[in-house]
Length: 189
Image (cartoon, rainbow, N blue to C red; front, top):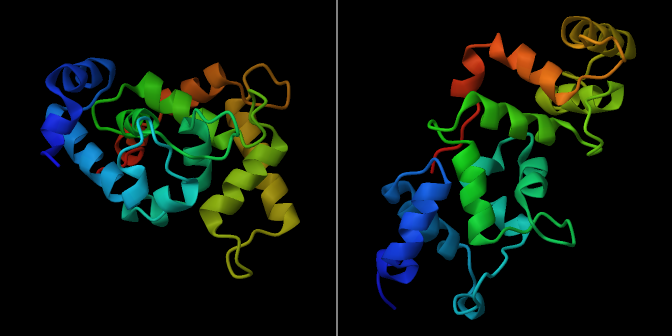
C-alpha cells in the first residue's frame, strides 16, 4: 500500500480542494482518518460506505449531542442509514470547517435541527433540539412549562412571518445576528 497522497491521486486531491473549504493537508488527514475506520475487507472497495456506528466512534463526534443527525444529514445513502462515503465525510468536514461561509454553516445547522426533515423548525423540532442540548437527564430536563416558555420565546424572536415555525431564511436571519455561531459550529480532525 502506498501513501495517503498517492492513494487519492493529485487530480482527485485537487478536485476535492476545489469543491470543499478544506486544504490539501486537511483532505489528506480526513482520508487517513476515514481509512482507519475501514475493516481490512473494505479497504479495496471503491466508494465504500462506513456505517454510522463506526463514524460515531470518532472522538470529534462521540460527544456531540447531534452526532446521529449530523451523519444522517450528510449521508447520501438511499437507505437513509447515516452511513458515509469518503465524499460524504469530506462534505461534513467542509461544512464544519473554519473556512466555510456563514451561509453554508447555517444551512447545514438548520438541516441538522430539522429533525422531521420537513423544511421548518416547528415546536417538536425545537423541543428535540433543547432536549439534545440539555442532555435529557432528570436533573437537566426542563419542565413542560419551562419547555413551552422557552420555545415560545424562540419562536417570538425567530418566527418573522408568525406561522408558528422557523424556516431557513428566518433561521439564517437569527444566525446572522449571532457572531459566535461560526466559531462554535466546527469539527476539527
